[in-house]
Each structure stands twice: as structure tokens, then as C-alpha cells.
Image (cartoon, rainbow, N blue to C red):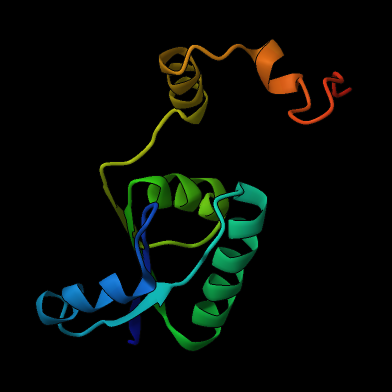
Length: 124
């Protein structure tokens, strides 16, 4: 039975962080998923590709994900065959986080819709 752990890092992290789990996870191969973007639809493609590659080579797939990486894992892998997922400080409600951050920065949804360099309102 071949087992693998897919590691998904948080913001500012690296796929190389997966190395720290090797000594405590004997019997598992560990693959750190590298991504440089934070747009869910872009990161989703990278995570799906790593999952598909692992699915071809391993009998059991586990996930360790940190912070925003946990959100990406939940978003991307919800319909996949994952044995167990371990989330470190997960972002569970992305909308609430965004709204809180906007509030802290005193930014409204209207402010976000205004194009920054031309003083025009962007249309949905």
C-alpha cells in the first residue's frame, strides 16, 4: 500500500515546508505543492494537477494544509478521495475574512469596484 501526503502551504510559505514532516511521517511519501498565486481558480488547477498525479501513483492520499492552503484544499479537493486531511490554522470562512479585512482597512465594496487609475466605475 503506497501512501502519500500532499502538503499545501500558507501565504508566504513554500512547498519545501513539506520536508519538516518527513521524520514524523514514516511510511509516507510527502509532496509539497508549489504555487505562487493566491487566486483560488489558479491555485485550484495546480492542486488538482498534483492530486491527479498522486492518484495515479498512490493507493492512499492524505493532506496536510496550512492557513490559506487549508482553504484551497477544502475548495479544490472536496470531491476527491482523501483518506484524512489535517488543517493547521485553517481559513474556514473566506468571505468573513475578506469582509473583516475590508472593515479594518476602512474599504467598502463600492471602493473596490472603482477602478484605481481612471476614476471610472467597473461594471460587474
